[in-house]
Length: 255
Ligand SMILES: [Zn+2]
Image (tube, rainbow, N blue to C red):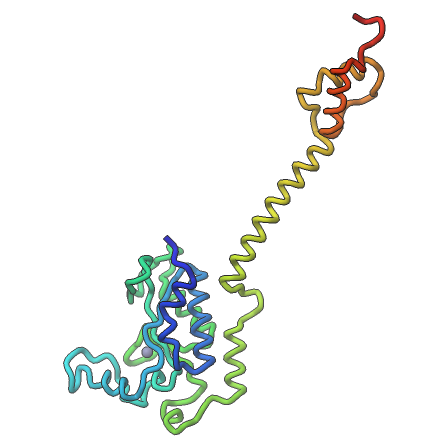
């Protein structure tokens, strides 16, 4: 069973709140583009407050659990709405997977790699490219700003933001999920109409005399009413048949 795009989007909606606007737009595009490739994903983390980051940093240090981050509060791009984490959404629509080898759409390429390439095309940097502490589910937009810059209140320039939006919008050939559905429906209409036209054309000039009209055609030629009975329309053969039944082609003298 395939999940609906509206459902897949809804699974991530709450995690998109508070993201930097162009990062949010890129994340929405990422969800759609992955869905178009048969890979439903879910955003598991977006904006993380500095207090939440501090609490996460404490995990495995002053609090029980495993160490999951090297960043204190204010040292992660998540704290500024510039980063997201994702997981693969399973066909049941509920469970998620961090299996980077999984090939759910069976195209011979790991889904994780497909998501990463879509994200990079949208302008994200990938945590899996980091030299130390590889963070495979993590994407961020840096705009050449360090977390120190962001803590100091610096923001991307308008030119950087515009450039980021250009990548998100992509080339015009990229169809949205809705556009693909509309296009498919249009294709089906065109195919159905092409079949109708072929039938109508076939009726207008039939390649062969219909078997039910053969006797009438023979009689009409014998009577000298017609030189040729080939290539007539459906209605032509009907008329000849009706005339034949009325005796119009009975040759005088012949019995
Ligand atoms: Zn992250």
